[in-house]
Image (cartoon, rainbow, N blue to C red):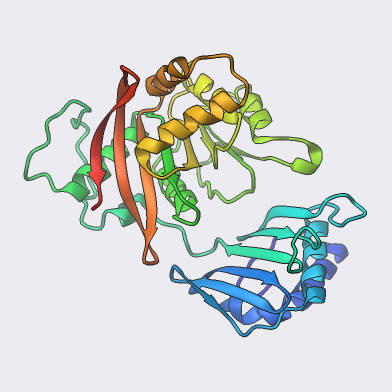
Length: 346
């Protein structure tokens, strides 16, 4: 166990040896790894270490040499059963280790020296109710998509109930936002309110999702084995899923995902990068067009509108992560997505 970070290895001599080596390589980062207020540690180059603490970036006096960085990256690559190095022809590493996610780029690709980014995943788990602190814990099942809301129905209660309804009635939901806005944490919160009897398949580029459902299978793409997220979405359809969750939609898998949604696979979730909830629909459309599908943009948009039921957009303002925008998708007409805005922060 590296300080502050749990790394699960095989309980054998090699595993214990690698753990000891990694602890030694990370010795100068130990105070940062131990600090629960620090979410991310960024090594830009030799002795150039930054952190994110409570949403704010700051430079640290930590001295982390080129040699330290190279050792740590090589040990992590060995743990991930990958070869990293110029001779191996692979200079990038992106993998999860216990409750941290590590991305690394070796010099000379990283011009300032070996670069390393460690995101600590421990301690960021949230329940859906945490996003709506004044919401009631019990929501009536009679709330329907065409119901007129009462003036006395407080917004947090309304949105909390609406999200519970979306999940329980197997709506297809996108979670959008920029980098480090909490998309994966929010996705975890949605997974936690799924019915326990549902069979869930999760697909990720790098494992971050936390799944407590008893019947679930987790897949992770592997570039070194030429297994992509799109490959896994296609394979998942043969695994009898009740629900499919894609940790991040960023390419051709967007087409296969909406095809799955439009052929009886309801209750799907996914995240993507976008500037707003409405923009997320356009981003999904662009991904599908770029993967070589011979459809018009209008045909793609109609497919998206027929299967995506809602979009929640997250943002980070002044270090605070929040739900900025939430829309319900109601169709596509005259070149425009028809949506109902449920929340729009000023």
